[in-house]
Length: 225
Image 1 (cartoon, rainbow, N blue to C red):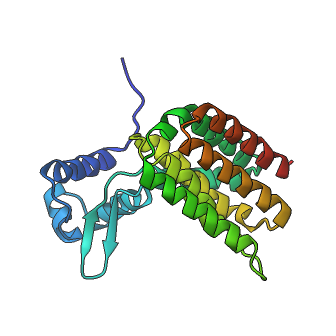
Image 2: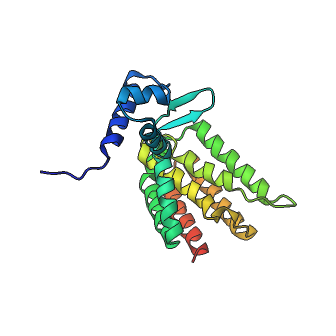
Image 3: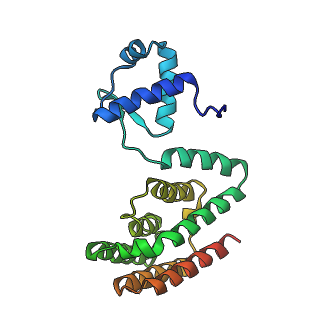
């Protein structure tokens, strides 16, 4: 049986090269010139594979430091791909948002039960800072806090793909300008939900916290209707 080929021959070769370094626990890669010699590929071809690996978030290149392997993250590839999809058809952000909502709800009960006292203090602090920003004489939009609040809840879930999608959602939230919404009454209501969800998690009432999370997501969806 013939299976569809996901990568080109050169891409597969370079990926296997990266995996060998990863298995050895080596982070630093040789120079492009040395990689070219080791793989038997021309320097332009090596540069091509490096650019792909950078796009996927597998490596980084820094002056005087050279090429380094990065810990695997799902979000770089997802964010770039979905961003292109959203640029071509704007309604796709709502589709991606719905996927994120369903994933958060699916994992919420387990995620909430993993939060410890320190995590709950962190959630409370995030809520406090956000509310302070909203009520400044010149109100600020607590977008950074909004991102932190949601990601904090799922921080102990050991699933790189879940984490990647949740992180990508917030990257795209900024890229499509959702973080610029500045209706103070709306923001107050959003952060009231966050405060109540935190209080219910602290009380170990995860079911009621889940109900509020669901209400919160439906409330946000009405904003984009």
